[in-house]
Amino acid sequence: MPVHVITDSGCDLPDELVAKWNIRVVPLSIRFGAEELLDREQLATDAFWERLREVTDLPETAAPAPGRFVDAFRAAAQGGADAGVCINLSSALSATMQSAELAARDVAHEIPVTVIDSQQVSMGLGSLVLTAAALAADGADAATIEATVIAARDRTRLFGALDTLDFLRKGGRIGGAQALLGSMLSIKPLIEVRSGKVEEAGKVRTRSKALQALVDHVRAQPVESVAVLHGASADLDAFLDLLDPIVPRSEILVGTVGPTIGTHAGPGVIGVSFRVAEPS
Image 1 (cartoon, one colour):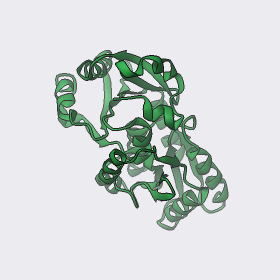
Image 2 (cartoon, rainbow, N blue to C red; image 1 turned 45 degrees about the horizontal axis):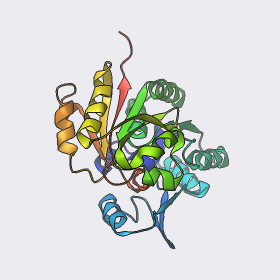
Image 3 (cartoon, rainbow, N blue to C red; image 1 turned 180 degrees about the vertical axis):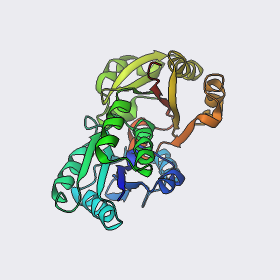
């Protein structure tokens, strides 16, 4: 019987890929004041970005309750899976991992579930989920999938260019990028998700230089599994054009940043995730 792959809505994978690989996505929730909505289920990505432009107070995100993961794990068992692999948002940035681990213990007598900390967000997480789903489709067991995902995680990088640090600061996820705050009004901040945390990756004064800096990170070493992430970014095509001499567009997976990550990254975020190629 197959291994089923589960993740959370911080993966930012396009719906068509979620369906193609039969991935179960457990939603985080987004709160606009007293109104709470489930990511991807009650709040579409496009609607989120439109709404974010209109509000004065930053929305808040909340990890799924363990029961949501219990439901997903049981659904996998009822669908014929003999094991589950659940890959989640960085535990340093979200309590989602804790919920998944509690749920895995609750259903251990029904289906064994391996829970993996991606130490990533957005398409950094999404690319690892796709790796797991492809292995599961080929008949790999949970132990093989876990070992492969962890090895891939250690080679995964994610760099982003933000229009402002306001959203990270207000959401409490700024981490090692705190040092950028003193000059945040006059720069375009660059961040990296490193060891599961948001860290400073540099600062430039124009958007074009920020995009070029992201390209330089891709160019710095042989890479594979390249993905671009963006949130309401008008210069997505320009960024893909810059990457094209290094990685053809046809080989780049593009994902739109959804509410879970977009709440903290803010409008205009654009980034690139890739896996450093193994030495030949």
